[in-house]
Length: 316
Image (cartoon, rainbow, N blue to C red; front, side, top):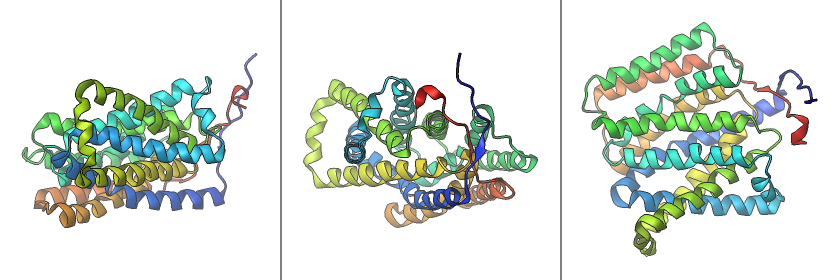
C-alpha cells in the first residue's frame, strides 16, 4: 500500500528569514540577466553564448556537488526524469528564448515583458502547489497584465512580435521548472536542483552546438566573448539559480516571485542605461511603474511561508 502523506506544514521563522536573504541576493543577480543577454545577443552567436555559459555554470555546480557528496543524486532513477524536465524547461528553453528574443527587442522592453512572471507564478502555484490566491492578488495580477497591454498598444516597443513572444514565454518556462522543482525539494536540496538544471542543459546545448555549428567554438578564444560567457555562467546562471532555489525552498513560490520581480526591473533599467545606453520612453516607464505597483500588491497581506508537503517514503 502507498505510504500516507502528511498534511502540509508551515516553515519556521528562521527558514523564512534565510529565504528572504536568498531572495534579495537573487534580485541583484537577476537584474543583470536581461542586460548581459542583450549585450551578448548583439555581439556573440546566440547558440554559442547559451551553450558555453551553461557549460561554465554546469562546471561550478558539479564542483559544488562533488564537494558535498550529492552529485550521485543527479542520476538517481527516482529523480532523473523530473530533474531532466526541470533542466529542459528552466535552462534550455529559457536561455534560447531569451537570447533570440533580445536580438531585436531592447532590454527595457524585455524587462517589462519579463514582469509577467508573477502572473504565471500565481496561476501555476494555485493549480499545482495548492497556494490559493486572495482577491487582492487577483486584482494585482490584472494590473500587471494591464500594464503590459498598455505598452503593447504602442506597437513599436514589442516589435517584432515573434521576438517579443519568445521573451514573454520565458517566465512561463521558468515558473514551470520551479513548480517541478518544488515536488522534489525536499528531499533534494537547492544545490542538487541547481546542478541538474545546468549539467543536463550543458549536455543538450553542447550537442546542438556541435551538430549545427561546431566551427563557432573557436570564437571563445577572444576575450570579448569569453569574459561575458564566464561571468554569465558562473554568476548570473549558477549563483542566480542557487539563490532562487534557496529562496523558494523556504518561502511560498508566488510570494517569493512577487517580492523579487518588483526590484529587478528598476535595477535592470539602471544597468541598461549605464551599460547599454538604452533610454526608456515615457510609455514604457509608465507601464513598468504600474506593473511594479501591481506586483507589490501581490506581496501585501500575503503569507511568505511555504506549504511544505512531506516527501513520500520512497524518497527516503
